[in-house]
Length: 142
Image 1: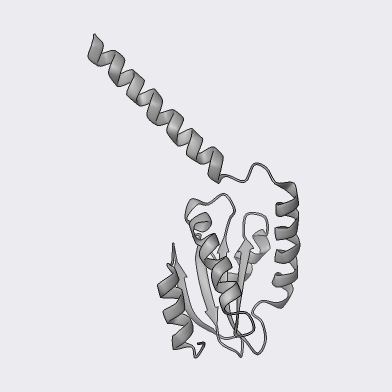
Image 2 (image 1 turned 60 degrees about the vertical axis):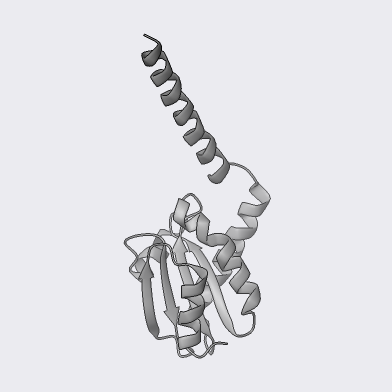
């Protein structure tokens, strides 16, 4: 009998832990941050890929866990490569037309464009910082 109670307690604890993690990582809250992000996305969509500059476009969603894991990496690289390469995030759940435009079927998807706006490389799934940096270096961005 004690084993059944322990097993139920364990299952409930795991379930509550999962719900807690989801609550932390899903975008339930900051309307100001969401509005700023949506405004930035709308501005980027009109000019993606950026002419005359190597461009990395990350197509994902705010509620996608791998996409959220990439968010701090992209923010860091956006600052690091400012003026050298454009790093753009587009939420395809909010901007479904962009998913069609770029032929995205699975998120996250990263697309690298050269200075002429030609697609050079495409990756589906989580892409780590070192892999992004390697690809940018292959494209002549230092």
